[in-house]
Image (tube, rainbow, N blue to C red; front, side, top):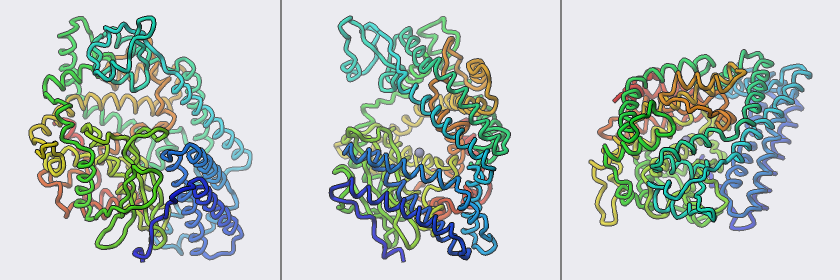
Length: 636
Ligand SMILES: [Zn+2]
């Protein structure tokens, strides 16, 4: 029946009207359906059907609004999209606290539902309970006020970080080591000084290439004091609000509340995970630490320990000296057009799908659109929007356009990236494969009857596993040689790929310890809500990071992920553990073995949110997930 479905027709012009229609219509429909549901008197099947339609309408509105607010070239369309997004959020919050709606759904007899229906019902009742809908009116009022204040404080915290950019003044000679384009864009001002800010495009290249150690020290000091001391006070308030929020709902602390809906399951499993990973990274991390320290001392004999002042710079030095990877040479093999064609070819072979380019209207002429076809059947459509332009989202991410629903609508997704139109850096090629992992997940999981299961609808700490696993294909010499050729048509040398890989892997366990320090900060601050955050931070850095604390700095004041990730910064590493485990099912000598990749497609990707991630992984691997593959990778 899916064969009859057609992709969403995007307008050739007047996007503002189209967008208004699309979102307003969907949200109005969701409201009508909820009113209808609350009238009651329906049987189980039609109650759940109506609820599914509410979910579907909400997802449709959210998807279009969020995508267009990030990609549309016209400012007016972007702000109209933002407004639609806020409307959708408001309705979502309102429904979460709607007592009458909750009563209708909690009255559904689960015994009359099939497995999918029971799972949807279980999830929705859990969401309602977590929102506090079943609490008395006074408590619900307190929860509303807490949520409002949490949003305000979190926004102020993030704003202070955005506005808290600091600058150091350097003499032009202190820019030694930096690439030509950086020098050109950092000319001395009238007083003869060059100003370097703590914003990433200034800070990261300086810390990677700037030879002047004293300048690096000044820059680190400025960087690690952004938003200090203002955010210390705000963070303390945010931690208290979150603790109260969790405790009102009957949880001992925020991490316990937050982890309940993740693959990790329990709050106290987070510190166990962090300790286990830190321990696994200890040997190889300390070995690399010594290599770094020895190399730093060649230049600066008095340095006592490795800190942020030297870490990035000397990691780069060692990678260049030991592995002799010339980034300029590497990029000659990654011509954008060939890379894009290669990506489609590689993933098409892996997942048994074809991409048929289609000429349809989209929001910008850079966008390339393809129908995704499997065995002659149309599965959905993808749109690749891969080059920078003004007003566009400036990182790399996958966005939904339409969630796919069996028999009702085809999945459509979009990759939004900012790559060069000519030669690409290899790490951008890796990013492209990573993001494509999310996109293919979205499309392949687009054939469930339940909107709740559609696409990347899995636990948050599992979301990155399929995309991190697909990165492996961008590091494999045999895979790369299918599309990475230079202007003369020569394939990238196998030996060069191996050196690139070895260079990339130097210091990985050391970096894992930095990540575990961040994860521990995110967890422990939320669980303990310490009076002196800086003191807690120093203690955690000593315990987890192999880098030493830089005196008189306050990293937490500008650790923006404390807002979005809360106590869950561990999630990215958790996904990586699972990704390495999933990858262990593939034969490294033949990454195109379709027996394994088709099974992966069907058990993991196509399942979407229809089952718990741990069960999907166990199904695919034939055993529960384990840390073995990750630990082997870490210590090789
Ligand atoms: Zn990702």
